[in-house]
Amino acid sequence: SDTCVSEIAGKSFPIRDWSQCGVLIEMDSRAYHIGQQVPITLKFKLGRTIKDVQLSAEIVRKTQNLIAFDFVHMDAQTKAHFSKVLDEAIAQDFLNSQMA
Image 1 (cartoon, rainbow, N blue to C red):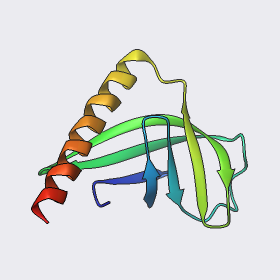
Image 2: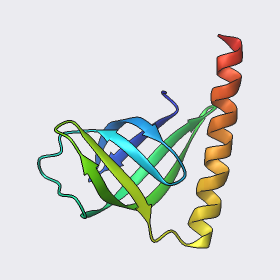
Image 3: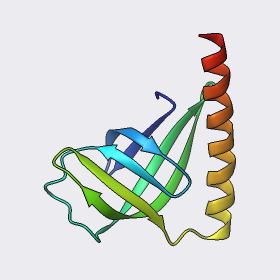
């Protein structure tokens, strides 16, 4: 959906799928390896505001054009913030689906 995009090393990449545990990002995977830890910023468009969630993620799978990341080392404050933003995003997606 257009609700969320990822940012890695200052570049934006589309997200194929996401959850509280990880994210699947469409990107050229050649410069990355399995087990590598990468800082990711998820940018959620909620109404007229953009909410950023900064996470540390580890590459668990990759193909030529997709990388699957698991979120790692999430402290309680980050977990709570991420959970709140996800709840808002899910509610917004649901509302949008009902109005389509």
